[in-house]
Amino acid sequence: MRGMPLLSVTMANPQVKPPPKATLADQAKALPNALPTALPKALPKALPKALPKALSKAQSKTQTKTKGSKVNRAWINDHVNDPYVKLAKREGYRARAAYKLKEIDETFGLIKPGHLVVDLGSVPGAWSQYLRRKFLPKPPTGGGAAGGASPSALNGTIIALDILSMEPIEGVVFLQGDFREADVLDRLVQQMAGRLADVVVSDMAPNLSGIDSADAARVEHLVELAIDFTQAHMKPQGALVAKVFHGSGYDALVKLFKQSFVTVKPVKPKASRDKSSETFLVGIGLKKDQASHP
Image (cartoon, rainbow, N blue to C red; front, top):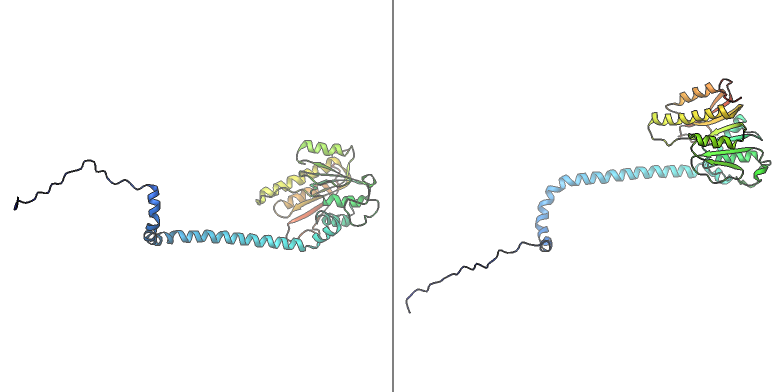
């Protein structure tokens, strides 16, 4: 009918559900749109704290790496240009250390034909190479450290020992083992076949920790063992050459040498680098009250 108001009726729908929560996939899709708005707001707060720390770490690593690289480059440069390194390469020695023993021997006249020499801490073998050349009946030609004569022709005996393995040297008897262990010492004595050493040379050195007191104790222990060995297995007129280090414990080692040997001389060979704290103590002639063998 005309004139009557129309009634509007809204029916409630009980089946209507709330919109589903956004899934991770939906959030990932939305992230590119949200970042341009959110990131500028977050960065000003986060950067002042995070950036200095990150830069400091990066700078520290760079400085350490640069410093280490400079030290390595400097050492390599010094080593390559070292005249004794060049000479060792030219003359066929495994290391420049051969010239340390050579200078000591020529200064004191220690190594003689027919001698029995024990080389402690022999690796890489440069000292044994020098000793072998001393025992060749004729001067080697061509500079070869291991050539020139058969082992039977050597006028002397060399027994080398080290905790590390060593490449063979013709005519040199090598024993691998820790000199601090009794069974290794027994093997060494057996190899001497009842003879007493004429000369004992020791280039033994412990792994250094950087702690002076601990390192000094380790060096002193090795030197004491070498002296004990000479007192039991070296001729009374024999000689000991031992590597030591200046610093904590050095005076104690000099005192120990003087208690054990008639003549004691400290030597810093020219082939020993100036920056190195190493030096060598030479003890000649066992004091009568120190020799434990007949």
